[in-house]
Amino acid sequence: MSEPTAAPTVRRVADVAVGDQLPSKTIHVDRARLVQYAGASLDRNRIHWDERFATSVGLPDVIAHGMFTMGSAVTVVSEWAGDAGRVVEYGTRFTNMVVVPYDGGADIEVSGVVKAVDPDTKRVTVELTATAAGQKALGRALAVVRLD
Image 1: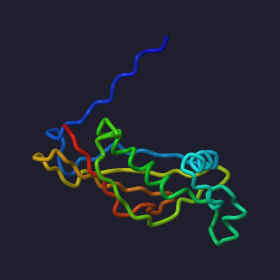
Image 2: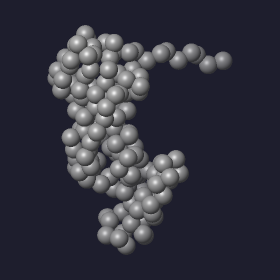
Image 3: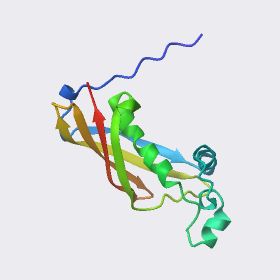
Image 4: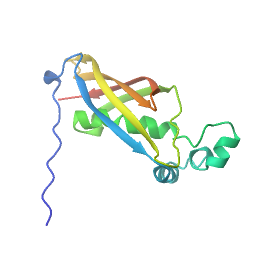
């Protein structure tokens, strides 16, 4: 019999301050994960899994789906908040592709910092930074969470 899993800690707005750093996270992506995502998202564009096709249209290699990158990055916020349902707004701009070589895949490095706290509405704004291969993958990535 397995041990019960502890419920995640739900963060309280009173315990959060502007400038607080969220725990960083590395998200590894490889070709198998891109194929799985393509099936789940129904975005089966060949640039996300077929190297020969991707390079034939001018890309350096297969690239991760933008929505995969965006969705992966926000897990930093949802894990920090203690519940993905607490994310009430999220938006970003895509600034660079995440190139995913066949050998070794790619890592997306994500960090976050609290930019605003509104104790009246219990909303906290977090700015995310997501990079891959030393280049910013997302720009103006902001998530708003509602805390207790």
